[in-house]
Length: 293
Image 1 (cartoon, one colour):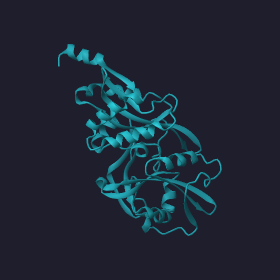
Image 2 (cartoon, rainbow, N blue to C red):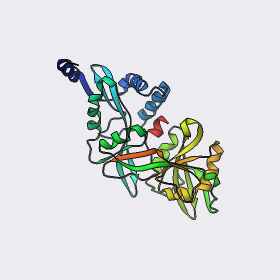
Image 3 (cartoon, rainbow, N blue to C red):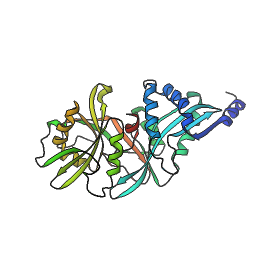
Image 4 (cartoon, helix red, strand yellow):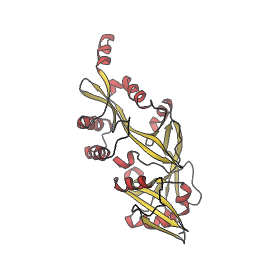
């Protein structure tokens, strides 16, 4: 490519926030970048995102690169204010980064735009193994190195524990994560539950998925206050979730978790963050899992 042609192309490539009017063309771009995903996957995911209140100072859907009026790159974002221990923090989940091959040199325009807020923790929870080194080169650090497919039905029940669907009233008054459970109960294929045991209440969010190349119906643990809570009540939760015909629950795990029956791997499930608050295992709230499935 001549220098003159390169300069003309550079002048024509611009970055902008994705707006609802851009969605149809962005869907077409994403289908080229991720050909295994049907059009409905993107359309329904964007529809769910559009129904959420926006966070001040953050784009609702993400950013795009366009050459003239034509989208040539995109990165999707989900920004939320989430509970972290006894406070609320700002977190942004990044996903579906794609730039057309002839415009890859401009991909950094997307990344530098996204990572500009020092008060935000950025996460990449679904990076493919072949991109891990690239993600780290962008300043991200792994916070989870694998995952474990557990079979909670094989764990012993806790005799004093009961499991009920979250109904807006069965968490303790003023619980910082009550809104999170309410939101996820409305998201795609999510199940928000509360375990009550000896006067204490423990929130959980699971999402239906398919494991091992989409072959095995299962759940993914999207939220709990501590993975130790899942270990403690795995038998109770497994029996409740079995009513959905799914017996496997996939959880974040660096190694096999004592007290759980299942299979651990480091070949997938690595998750990354960049920013002031290192995410903990067992917290994938408001990530692309919730909107796109």
